[in-house]
Structures are given as C-alpha cells and as structure tokens.
Amino acid sequence: MRKQYHIRHSERGLLAWDVDRLVRLTSEQEPVELPLERIQELDEAYWFSDDGNTPTCRRVAEHAQLINETSLDHPIIIDPEGRVMDGMHRVCKALISGIETIKAVKLLAMPEPDFVGVPINQLPYERAEPESPANGSQPIHSETITTSSAADSCR
Image: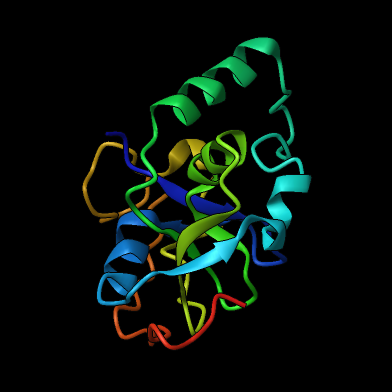
C-alpha cells in the first residue's frame, strides 16, 4: 500500500503526519466505540478541500472504491479535539452500512507533524518511514507522545 499521511493546513505551512507513526503511537490502546454523529468530518469537504482537488465523478468513484474495499477491523485515529487523523474511508463505510458507531483510538496529546511546509507532491510516498523530504528539510519525529487509555472516551 502507498504511504499515507494526514494533512492539515496551518500558518506554518502544510503539516503532514505519517499514518504509520500514528498507528504505532496508538497501538497499545483498547479501542472504544465512537458514535458516527460525533464525527464532524462527515459534514465537511474532507477529501476535496485542497486547491485544485475538484470532486469530479472520477475522484468520487475512486473514493467510493476505497470505501468499498476498506475493512472496519482497524480503529480510526482521532486527535485530542476529536478530529479524524486516520480512517475516513472506514467512517464512510460504517455510515453507508448503517452502523451507528466505529472503533476509535484517541491521541491524548497532539504529536508534532513529521513534515512542515513540504508540498504534498514532494512527500516521500514510496518509503516505509519518512527519511528526508525532497526539499532537503528534515522531518520532525516525536515518538514519545502520550496517548489516552481505554478508559478515556473518544470525546
């Protein structure tokens, strides 16, 4: 599978988190059931909010295929404010299937992004771990992030 990142825009430029690292940071957590009604991204232009990322029929069909192929076996990952950092295709699959909750793990504290100010098309998508972005700047890693325990709710 192609390398995946969670992307957010900020005053510091584009922020990118390596999804593999987010999975590692939450791997010891017991997932909890999160009601889909609490996932605000379901009512936002989540995949089509970037400039030039127009929701053409082809792009919608590509996401529909990903939704169809995804498994609900793995929990989604949400940030401390309850925003989805990994798993929107799983969220959509649960919605389409009429499921009212989804397994989720929540970061207790927000990890530093792996890349800051690196354009999406310059992120290393072939490597298993970000080593050195194409523009020469160094990635930022923070493996000591504290995550919530199973007793913590997902918001």
